[in-house]
Length: 249
Image 1 (cartoon, rainbow, N blue to C red):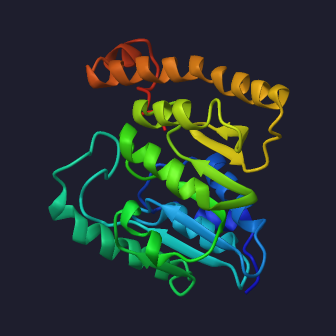
Image 2: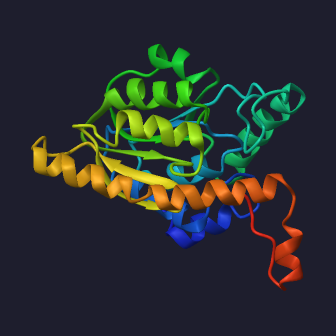
């Protein structure tokens, strides 16, 4: 299978529900495209398949793509933590339809389970790990710790809603900001990119910490924006002749 150009892949997910900006999609595309035959890509949190299609479309033949999502109606999206059981079955059906429509249905192995219950279903190490699962602190930290430990040396870990979600950011602060294994590469909005190649020296770790700490100013901005949107005072933007901002992601 010839890899589709990024612009074509981006166009293919235009109508697929999900929280992923074009630059975030490109970061996922580049990470998946860097994989080689025999490598493994694991995605935690697929929702309706927007990011899954990008990863599977960019991955070469012989690269395994695994999507882990229980489609249980919990941790479904921004402010959708629980109580969406009725939508769960539809999410699953739409997920499968979106993959089929994009021509990647046979490229993806879907594990319909919570991420902490899926380890036994995934063998070997991981070349690219994309985490967009539960955003509360405890499960987010568990994904970073347990699935991150399975990323091979030199591999890539990408985390959505970093420096946007309180839980995800707290987990990053606890496990990665002062860590010794994952090097912070940068971010596309709230999608952070880490490589498992951090030099263990004091200097390298200090630089890595500072680069992440600097992102906290953007985090504070996002928190303030969420407060404004939650209080439904977006009309102030409209009165000023500007479009009401969207939920940051």
